[in-house]
Length: 308
Ligand code: ADP
Image (cartoon, rainbow, N blue to C red; front, top):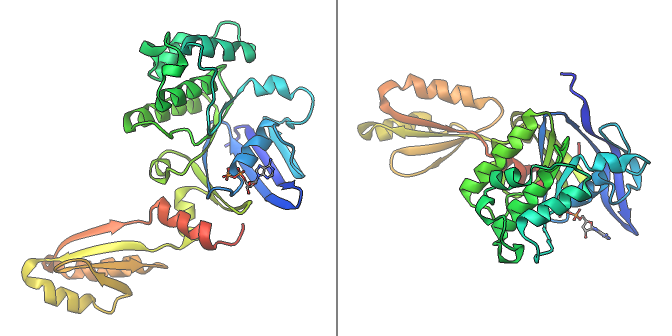
């Protein structure tokens, strides 16, 4: 793929006095690609986003956003093409949603922004002429998202974007983001909502104590993490004892109810177990394969991993 690089971080570090809060981060994002940035509170995610926006300067390393360094002249024009949704959105709440979005559009230098259309897209069509002070937390979050989408952004930096949104609005939010992505925007979002990230981003980066400890597709991280795939086997009613006896002693197994066992398969033992199970034919009533979730992988990397 030769899409351009929207983000290129090379050996980025950030120090506040004695505290080294970001260390030696190498991270790339291509046009049209999405990346989830995960990590415990204090891991350095927001600092990294601020560095990309040019709000704070790194103490070490190099940063290029669409080929430009955030601290060099000319970056402000590019900043108008970066959609940023901060973790805590604060608005002038005496204005209406429509006025506020038009205000942000002027700040970005846009001449004819599609304000009502954007507000419709985030589900604020009916509320656009109400004052923001009457908006719920979820409505403010959606207004923040509309603000980030202004000006056809080439890069979206979204810090905890789905906080306060119900499941339907979350789905609409990801549809909106995917649309921008198809239009070529790079998307970086930080989140704690691992379940929803899992199927919705191309790659996942995990930070721990300022370092990037993992970065790759879910499949790559699964391999690196070495988390077990769980295989649940349920024996046919009359065959429980026979099945349990013939599979007993195979790796890590634990009973999970009458006639059922769960095996934790590591390092290629999965296929061997499946062959053994399938050889038991009709003695087996059901088999369920449960790959490690992003939560399992995240726990592994955020607790124990050495940096990449
Ligand atoms: P995250 O977004 O992953 O929760 P942050 O990037 O906000 O993490 O913070 C990383 C670390 O940097 C934290 O220990 C935080 O206290 C520290 N930090 C962030 N901003 C500053 C600052 N302006 N001055 C000093 N320390 C800071």
